Length: 358
Image (cartoon, rainbow, N blue to C red):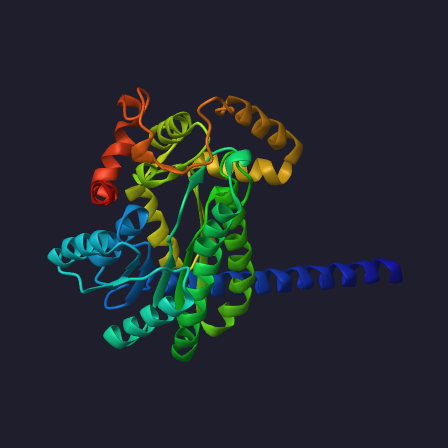
């Protein structure tokens, strides 16, 4: 008899415990939803947005979107001509724009650029680390300076802007940081070793920093795009059999099924920034590759070896000399296969830089 009563009491306590646990879960879910709703209400109107590499490519697409939403823009880039062209375009749309010629590899120049932004707009609300370089070619043709340049741009350059901007964000108790990494920052890609090495560094910085600055009201989003039609292929650097390297790279970057339009990618990035999302991986192929690399590393290793076997091998015309994309044309590129990527080059100021070099 006592045993039956004890079982009844245990059942009641179990039910109450389950109900209490469900209540805690429900309360936590409600708080999470409220916080998410608050993040979604985050407005970029009259916010000060700094974009490195903002004069062309993805950076320019992002600047256009932030401008439409009423942000005040600071564009940072190395080339004064492309900066001026981007500034004129954005100002015609009604945006307030400060264009600063700055090499993010130089900490002093970065500090000065951030100080000028604060002088002009009084604050930095959003920092987008987008400045980038791409070196394409086999390992044997890459030199230490290729790795140093990639690291200085993607890793050190991002760190310099963060170190200059975070103290101001902390004093205000809020801020957004967006680090544009790459799927190459989650898995090594053959013939892109300097790029992937430096993007891995940026990924590590993003993960660790996010955990530390969230308590200060600063939300950091790491972005991992797959192939994207930004138009930057014509200003990327190619080594080895440069014409063959340019052909596979530009065709891949221009295929609609394999790559995403930079405007669509930019919309996803701005949305993730507004929501304070920790990570954003762009394109289904990139998401699948990231998961496969984490779960089935041996399978991915075999797949990457297969990819490498299809890429250009050393030949008589191989060279460690660097050629830009526009110096490496062939019957494959430009061609109908690269039409979408080439159109993006015109839209996003990439052709303008080529004309300046010529």
